[in-house]
Length: 222
Image 1 (cartoon, rainbow, N blue to C red):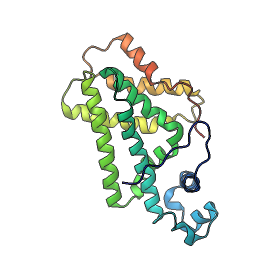
Image 2 (cartoon, rainbow, N blue to C red):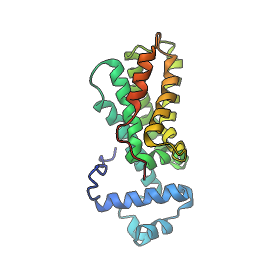
Image 3 (cartoon, one colour):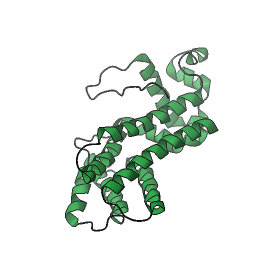
């Protein structure tokens, strides 16, 4: 497992040289597509010689793996950071944290969903393991909050919710909606997918969940 890399904070603190390089590479992969970017082009974009790139990364594929791995490490960290309060509140907090992560990991989500196929079989297996761990944590939150139904159905529900949470914010980028409106749409979709696994959902609980899934002060992703 790689050493955890810190995200830029809201004050705009200067990134380290390595973080700057990683960010520029991530932006290029997102713009051109990972498979379309050769090492020469990557080096040129980073402002260094092709040989110098290998001082920072073992390979282009290794860099992609680290970026996707970083995302799932952040999601698993969110599980720990939201493990307080009542069961329903912990579920809401985790869903909200997942959505909020798009604000500074939006391109990481894009890589995880669009470029996963470019990873080696070994790296694909490692990412699948991380994703399953996260899905298991979310399933546990659902069960603690009172979800009912067969385990296969609940697992499939969780997998669908994670897929939506990974993709919905990016899909809504060109919608013309404000950040708050996008969060409301995401909350409504996720709520609808979960309402069927709870015995007695109430209008008040539904409204509370939608509000809880909104991210206060959300801003468009750069």
